[in-house]
Length: 293
Image (cartoon, rainbow, N blue to C red):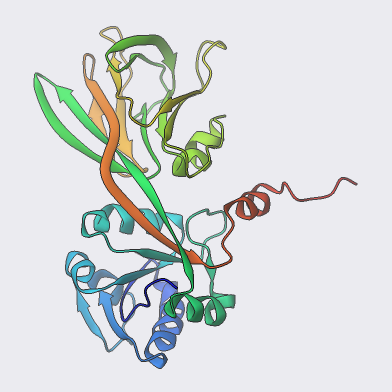
């Protein structure tokens, strides 16, 4: 049996005043189990009825042995990036619709969470990718992503011209609306909607997916996760483009800029119910299990 948890951190979907009732339900359940509870201070602002200690997210990660995230995949992505260096496991309670990370539902909270708190669960490790920017002979950190790093236009729809290098070797020149570099976790997000393949979450790989490429010959490319991807904005490109990690506010790009994307050394630990099956989630979300009429 895996480790049982004793101190729980509670994190909720930001800027959603409707979440208070769900947070109260989860908090009441945890306290009834005799567990110590700490609330993320930003979550506490959405949860005025709470009477537990509220701390900054970084402190929560240092003091808890499990963080429970109430919301959708976006909320869990934010928590994962914020807490990854603290090596705290994350459990997602799903409030959203289409999602692949948060898999415990409020309707089954009692049986699922009871088993998890008793140490009956699956733990899974997911890796992140990091993006750096070389601009005007200076290198700076852009961010990390559990799902994807995306290069795309800023305001008006314009074709971006860029070159791609893999481990220092030239791969291709492209004219497109942008490029998605996704992890296996992110292969069911933006990359999938752009026509990319689904990667098994245990695969050590990345996928490059063009967004509305000008050339029909551009196709998704799966790489080993140890590869270093470099994207150079063409000197001829006049499009207003930007780079963003997991859909966060982007950093403006200009001609000649180089974006370097590679596997980060940190690992995100995800907790799932004991009966968790990633393929059943794919069937449910993508409607693979429906019988033919």
